[in-house]
Length: 223
Image 1 (cartoon, rainbow, N blue to C red):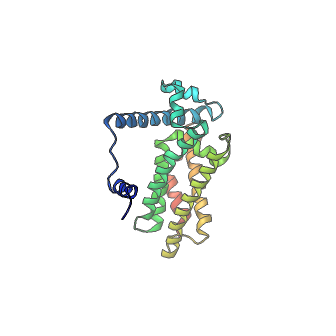
Image 2 (cartoon, helix red, strand yellow):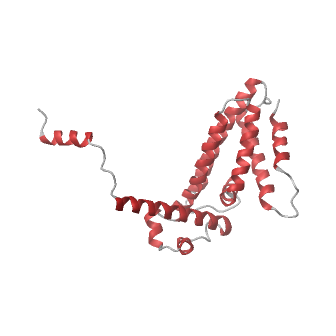
Image 3 (cartoon, rainbow, N blue to C red):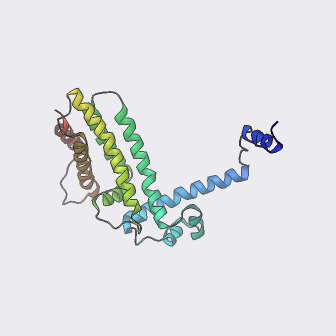
């Protein structure tokens, strides 16, 4: 026969987890809202004044919370920076993957993905600026350089997804020949260049519309 300890353990494993109390749930929701606020403020600060000129104290002041509250959510400034990159990066990867997996001619899918990325960058210009800076290496990153590695890893994943679409299009005879991964990198480079044109709004920048860019993507990759 099993011992008392084994019986208790089996009973414990069989019973569902105890739901959080109303007080615990309220605390969880408050922390979740605070975390979102911190990431919103930090994203703006990192994009406008840079990583090294942004401090935990300045983020706390803008959020009107105590510095200690931020440290209950994040280990340090590097962790905040990484979370800023992860938050929207994960969303962009998810919607890219979903669109790339939809049935239909692959050349049209590639153009649709290009439009999706441009509209996402427009919706989140601060995050797009951070990602762009990390991709080009034009801005100093966090002290341990992990966020740049994080971005590089995300870039590889998106590149893999695009390479699958391109390979499928080549099999369909609708996308030009060439190494799929190399063409995926060209595609991402075109997106990056258009983002810089699209995001500045300066009078000295050429007026190049989204429709013109999508036509260029279509012409560049169609067989």
